[in-house]
Length: 299
Image (cartoon, rainbow, N blue to C red; front, side):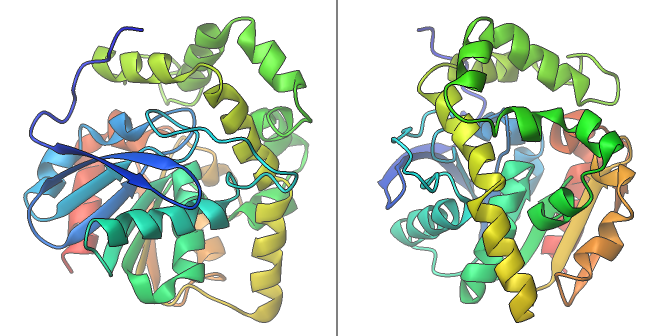
């Protein structure tokens, strides 16, 4: 397999054995630690356009989640661990501790945003500030899954189907499916927002056993993750660190009843706004995304 181009040439490469998987991460910059977590169907490469500005103020840790990119893809159990967000969040805490960071700031996009807010709920003492990119909580997504939302987010239902149905269907033409998914979630509805070097990373990582792992991520989202969210809501548990929620004005959260109002039911100190973008804020509009993150994390 061809090795994709290095998008972080000034960053070190690190590996850490965790309770979920052997994690790959890039580490660079200077200042307090900031953990950046990617989403589906991408890898750590999605942060390459905002990392230079953030690295001037922060020590960045940019991992591949379990089952994604260069991290390992262990077999899931019947509860879909380690691809549930609680298991992934614990693994990221273990990664940060291994790198010497007991407390840190945290930003997550897409599935990485779901890992990020779960980490803030389960490990509140670890997180100084939290930012989520283009999501609302998993429980809120399922609660609002009417016909319009189901058509727009069909992949939530498709990828969560029992194995091996989605794996077999995607496996017939994985790169076509990957590229169609990426293009369809942008504001321009094409691949123009993505650097060729980043696309090379996404294509290289969209193979088995990772395709199965990514489906397990969504199976967890329809079962274990939903149960964890509902339990926290019933217990009145909230995210108490300062929080930023940003979303694409042409992204999925923008079509809900209101991303900021939704997050204010889950977090005690939350601010946010829409960015001129589709789903992939950090690649479609990196300047505005970096500005929003820098303003929040340096406040």
